[in-house]
Image (tube, rainbow, N blue to C red; front, side, top):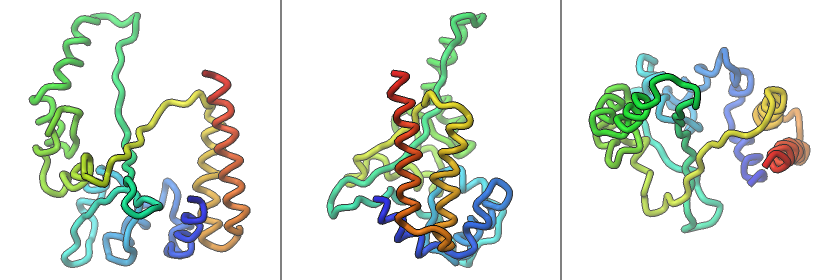
Length: 203
């Protein structure tokens, strides 16, 4: 897998690393909108985020799961699921429970659809416009059987900062040729092993 990412680095637009930060990331997104790059990682919020930006003539959004490494194998989607909970010391807990029940209703799904979002209510995505539906249509596709969700890890802020730097910060150096694929891969392995060890020690 790391070899594949190293190959992708060789295809990455040379301007991407300098703009891969919290201040200039929109410049990287603009490359896609102007048909200057073929694809980018993204999520459903990108539609609304770039709604007013200049786009190439005939531009339309498309969405696909992460390709498998072997032919005819399952493809994978990564999804973030927002969690809700009621603190044990919270007031009006019965009302909170009623609200959580309501959040799974068709009415709640319709409200979310107005803002380009969906819920876990079955077929809720059918209430979205066509552009937003494209980002949910891959769920349940015959080749999209892998689904990865996020999880909370017992990691400190410094751990996550180091992980972000090791995984994403160094990828820019790989694109620019400042580090070799071998040294980049080893840095990723070291960072993930460290975080995995801390997670396992806490469970």
